[in-house]
Image 1: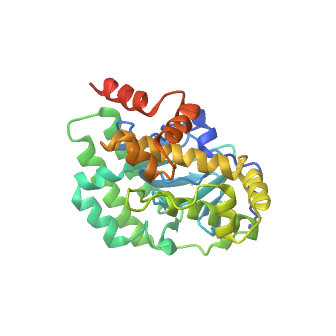
Image 2: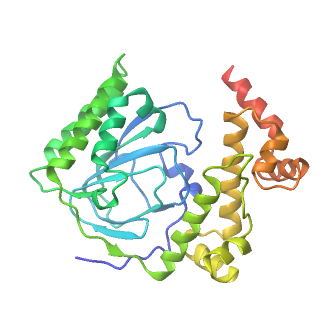
Image 3: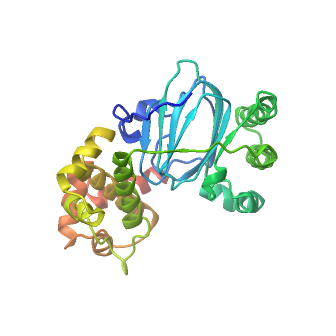
Length: 309
């Protein structure tokens, strides 16, 4: 059975903090986590922003519409999905009885375990989008399910070698995925969602490599619309329809995310940060930051350092 994707009711992940088991903030202190979909259901969401973790989602029961980039998949059979941190994805849940698991692991986790990184590079399940969605037969489900159960058990026991064990199971999971190798053909998304995807892809491009030598080039909804070749009002209409927020809100939220990263992960002064973020001067950046967070950039940086002490 095929269905036409309708993202009208899908909210942004940012608006559903009570519906996701892990906070999106990059500075949360974990490297790998395992979740049972029975208790941590993947509800409707659109995740346009860069995440700090890789994800393997195992759907053993239930149905939904999954979109990755410009490809849409109707899922009503057991399926594995490999989701890269930079993927623009959405999920629309179509059933009330989800089952399966998912594991999240941060980029730094692959640095701790170079063999895991080598396996990721070798099989390209995250980078070759033709292999990122894998259909499973009923006979193949028990093997995959058992690997997730083992990972869950390791996390629950919290032993000395918990992370070593989990990364080994993730590698085994990738090997089993390659052995199965059944890749469903995607459906194309609508022209409307294509524009939505292009906006978030441009937003990712503009903000993913911020530094003093290459500050943000465009920051307004009008500038983004011009780059996409559409009218600003139409861009806002599409984003409002599909995500519940207009372009300016998405841009603002992403700028805040990147500003927090620069404040907490670098020792740059405020002048360098504000310039890199595309502000004309440091006071304007400080006003923007305080208006949207309730703290000045200096207070935000100090509060985090104090909490870590």
